[in-house]
Image (cartoon, rainbow, N blue to C red; front, side, top):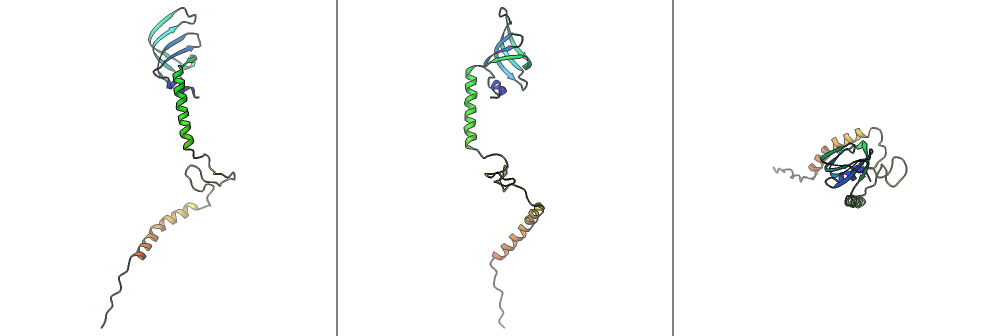
Length: 158
């Protein structure tokens, strides 16, 4: 489990942080950044020897100095439930991965992200596609003209 996501799930919850110098900080987690720098509020700081205590309204702890994070069990349970629900959704929406389909040969298979045939295209296929796209409207017009009922030519009797 990714530690930052676990810590971020604990925002607003009580947490105990022990730093490398031996001091420990008990407080409510306000925020955590990508370097695991923490901001705690309503903090009680305990000295390394455990004989002195300080009450702080807010405290910033640099991620580099953190030795242990004691996260409540309810946060762990919440993260595990979210992970399991995401895994179930991913299992239901599974589309496969990679470029190929069931075959292991190069260039074949059922396509990757965009579907299609997969594999390499012959040289100049872009030009062929452009020509086909330009010819398509002309062909549609010809088909429409053929489908329209033509009025019989006027006959003259003289």
